[in-house]
Length: 376
Image (cartoon, one colour):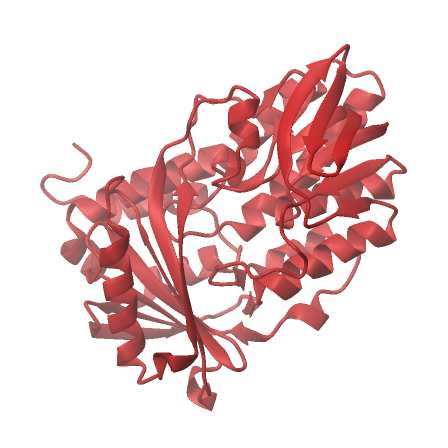
């Protein structure tokens, strides 16, 4: 029997496993994918996560972004060189996720990939986790299987609000000028936005609806293809994948009896710019703290986890939802007032790089966007 079983080996699950194993806890991570596995994702990572680990991420950083270009329907551009911030990392998720789980394994965590979990059951204060390869038991359970994983639902958490997202990965030569440039376009995708992140030998074109829960995948595909065309890339070497984003629900706990939910399985994703890796890692760290405390006899540890995430990250996501609601009500005006100005562009860049939070800037943004009809 294990101290903890973690279902899902993405950034949240791998981080929880690393921290628990480092404390000498027995951990089993189970993932249905065969690692390293392809994961559709823009691959932008805030360098702020470096402060949370005692190892170097250099081996999986493909390039860094030090400038951001914003456009409205591919026109009306502004390009901002990010000042006084560490450049944002660009990674490929197959390499990044595998790197993290290998670090957890090195600390003593067990890992079963290519193994699908078919059900869970709590009996006599022990989790019974059923898989194709048999049943595994643990004292505690962490649901880390992402936006479309079943574990949170099995645990009884209510279904989150979801929005459609997609990614178009294109392997191609990346010009020197674009190696360090992130590109965000507003307006082309109604009630959403698109972004492009460079790697050494590819671009990741991504898009998501922000306010439209019924946004159609075919519209994202159409707009992402148009986005790639603007870069003049050949789509012969491309891979398109649709996904969903779970939106944060402030009134939902992230714990139940002897279990926690982390990362995007719990809606821990930025609703305005789609950032998911850094918040996922944050929840993985805090989940490890909570599980370890619970193993030591702290009966309030799991409830404290829900409160910590709500206070330290959920409040920020709620502010982001407010800003997104204001922005997408009058997006063209908001683009000119809230994005295109140099100060606003720097502010968004610092949010991307983890130097600022929405809680830091929400009041400024609200004041800037105070035009007739906003905020009502």
